[in-house]
Image (cartoon, rainbow, N blue to C red):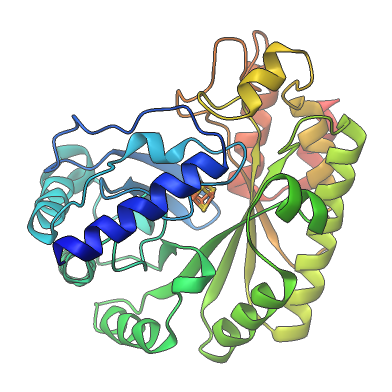
Length: 341
Ligand code: SF4
């Protein structure tokens, strides 16, 4: 990338951070040959490997409760460093020990993998090549991105490459939806996502038989009551299910209970008593409305260490309900949720 283009992206990140009143620092001292984070999850698809690559931060950077850019870089990270991150993942003993058992891989850069100005296309293709070569039972590759970077020709090419693996791997596009209510999503949370843009994305994804994952947050903004938060998720479940029916597309809702992310506007709101994270009992209540609907639901149960002290939805004594929700994630068994109240 040319220096002038890098400067332009840097300015966009600075403007977004300023607009969102972010006070966090970027993680500029991280070793750029290593991914930012990686972990395993368990879902109905089986073992999932989640990798967050270390790259230049999200160009949007405005969303009210988000401090994910603080885990990555304010500098441009060149393609060869991201390729070294790919090599790092495929050299990890814990990853290679499970390589035949990994059914799904989710890749993120805490922004948009499909934004070529922040994440290298060469490194993405290199990653897919190593997936094909190593993960013989991979069923789904999930790519996190904002919808504006979804370029259908690029997806077609990625899908073709994935089809060359021993087992045909399905492509899933994961986008942040965050809140169903338009005003909360765009005017308060500052997501910059209209329903029209979302529906155009669904049409394109459905045409190519790709899958869709939509990230939602329960209680994403201050001054929202617990009941309003539950109702918003129920409305989101209903909408996604109808959308899946209408377009014949497979949709997963990934529901993250909101934590008080350091360096965001949730932090002063929490300190002033205007925001309390949602209760996991209410999360269980919200997802119960998915029973019989045409979507799957996965509850995110980690605050990734990014919450202020006392600002997590993980509270002392919550281990029992966390275990039930983890079981729900793996089974989609709605009867388990009756034990959560
Ligand atoms: S939620 Fe996503 S799009 Fe919004 S600032 Fe965070 S990383 Fe960027």
